[in-house]
Length: 283
Image 1 (tube, rainbow, N blue to C red):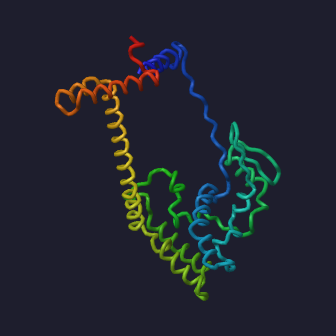
Image 2 (tube, rainbow, N blue to C red):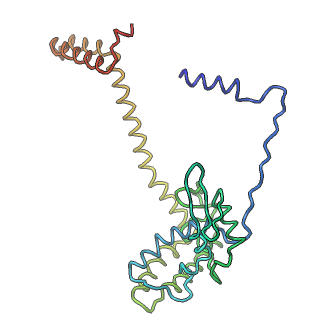
């Protein structure tokens, strides 16, 4: 409490503006944005989820090659080769290095700008923008772990956008998982049901409600754990500060003998001395 008061006093005395000196807000330099319409950050979210949810499971199921014209083929990923040319170095400050020419940048954003300006020749001809498939995985607002809270009532969902995303999803499934082979036919049915047919605002609202309800047991459990820890801590403090009164109450009520209380008192005093908490030295 004393430390908190000292910090508050320092803030009041030295943290505010100097009297008589007008405060001039610091000018914020706007960040240079990319010119290409395909969003790299959203494409990264889609690429991560696509690889985990579709590409790797499909390879394990027996899809050793992607059909010609498959928009989900990693070789057709517009920014896929650029992502492989990035090197991240951690230290006093995070640095990003371009493997194509060795230039170093302070953030991934400026490395993306460099790749767009200098190395567009490294992108595939007719490359597919994965950001166009963000609705399939509900990552248009960012990754599920880090995105801002979306409206549960579905007011941010547009039926026309969802219909376009559903058509794009069904076309991708048809091109990537044709029906003329048994393995791809099974995957086509599975992924179409899991990703394409649920692209509807009413279904999206229900999914978000279920995700919220799934988090409630975890939140309740954390609250219970904190409450139990607080109760245990309070009991320990009470037992330490009022141990003499508690032992006397046990003797008077006949719940403990005088010999038992004497041994408890000796054990308590021994423990205090061993931990350097002997109160007689502090008086």
